[in-house]
Length: 179
Image 1 (cartoon, rainbow, N blue to C red):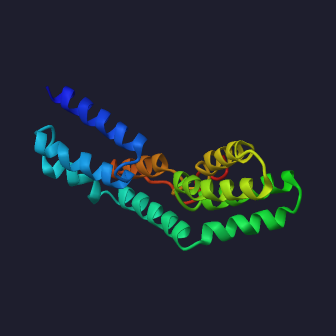
Image 2 (cartoon, rainbow, N blue to C red):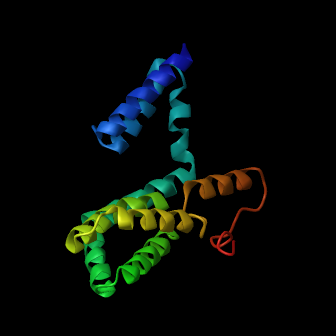
């Protein structure tokens, strides 16, 4: 019975994510709070994630990313990239990938993609080009940036936290960079 409840909540969450109603963060909180009321998990188990520093860091990185979009920094960055690239599409790709890779190595690569999607759409519209010509390089740069530092992706943080919890030495900030 618990499995059926979990699958139903998962299906409901997927539908809400797809239609984007309510916002993704609200969907996550709704599902997290619904599980204890169904008896699948206890309230302490539902809230245990908030005690994990990795989860708090990931949430903070998303807040920073949203702040960059809301303050217009992302829009200005798009305008700057477009101006610096001039008429060269190759220069634009290099600048875009360097910006995404650089920022993605310091914060969640997923959040960086969320920041740069409107940037890429704005540049594409200004240049009259298909957004897909910039979206794939954006994706590759974000994926590569996730392998550069400890905080670039959630799995890096989760593995580091588990190593420390098991008594092993964790990774340093740049442990992943040489690879």
